[in-house]
Length: 483
Image (cartoon, rainbow, N blue to C red; front, side, top):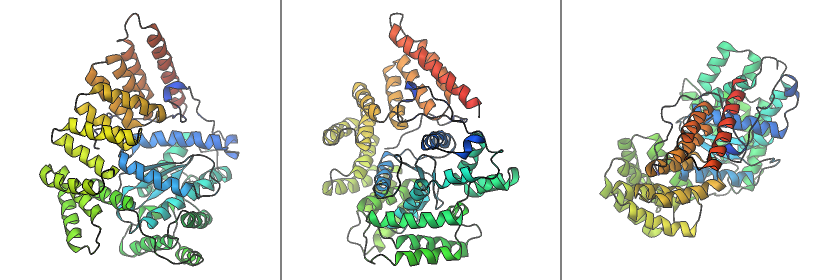
């Protein structure tokens, strides 16, 4: 599914996020990170900081809103978390649209993965080795421990902490340059993992990798890949700017892997499809992507070419070559009619060829098999909107948001639904919820005020609820100002 975000041109500021409940339901207070508070960083405070950072990240960085890729990454990440030690809270996994090889983790179990990491990985175990390493940084509380142990805490504020870490993990080369010019070396040291932390993350990450059923040797393969890149490039890979790679680290990881049996670990079809999807939509231009997949199909000796055919179908669809794309998708679905990757792109194909009603019919049957699956539900709702079946879309999205109240794409689709229905009060309230997820509480409050202007005289309960929501957003904006 390809969606146009509601907030394409918005400039957003510092953010304050909610817990897992809907943002309108709870007034929140910014965690106190004064100098004395930095001596102790309890789990609940770490989670609160992580939520602040996640909202800030959404407003500043190209977070990928792709339900299929999100489903794959979350499944892979949770498989690793289930086999990790010292897990204290649920993890959140997300993609950043960036061609650099990089991944990062921050407070509260948030793990970001650049699309360039899967695009340049050789197999699923390599990808999993990096994610397992980042999970270890969180479970061993390396960021929290560095903050607690900092010798110069007096200069650290929430704003500085968040801005510095985000600048470094998302754009490490630019972030470090900015910090070096404007902040103390102590602040810079907060953002780069120490060699001891890297060794610890390597050790715990490899154990997690093995227990989760991936190849532990992939960790050394990945580090060797990065080490080789250093030799041929003036600028080191982004991952190495925050994850030091002394010569001893590669050999240490290689030796540690030898405690495990050497055997073949095949990558899953989902990994191959996710990689093809990233290459087709986030890595190559459309014509270059087509050339890549055609050449790969001609040269591949593998009997299973589904992932390459899938990638080619995406590039053809994005070039509006619908007949060619449709033939490939029909072949893929005939062999695997319930595959989420295929169903997602086939929905795009049906909508693009003015057959939204057929997409609704197809996805209705799938929804009965997998109710509230995000790929099926969001595609179903999107197709229903295109088919002008607004009540269907509204019902689907309301139920979905009960389980995932902070899902931005779902909120965006619901906002589109209300706009199409000319339900102005609901439209502005829903739009306010989208703004709030990005931390733009002033804009959110403005939208609630617009919603109030469209409430009927006899809708006292709705008016009271919206006034309470307006008060909450304004209070949240005041909390932001304290940064």
